[in-house]
Image (tube, rainbow, N blue to C red; front, side, top):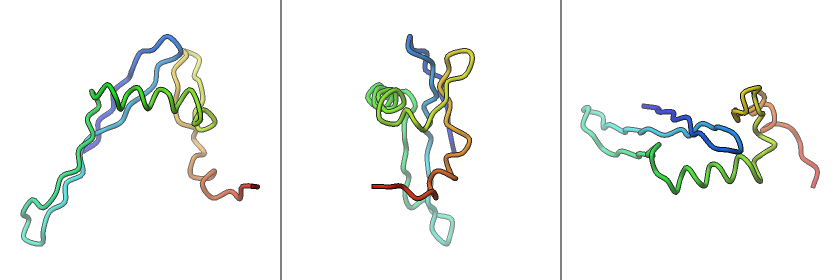
Length: 83
């Protein structure tokens, strides 16, 4: 299950994604749940710092000052980087 929350911020709105991954066993029994809360203030602040800081190159600003992930993220992953 995936959740998305739009966070309004003076420097630009951005999305925080969360939800849960559920692992079930071969007989359908619940084995494990990994949850990420979209309302967690610490996660939201970390995301904001990343989007507007070190990760800025991975995001574009829309006309309404909303930060959205670049459409070519998968392509960037496979480009060679010079070090």
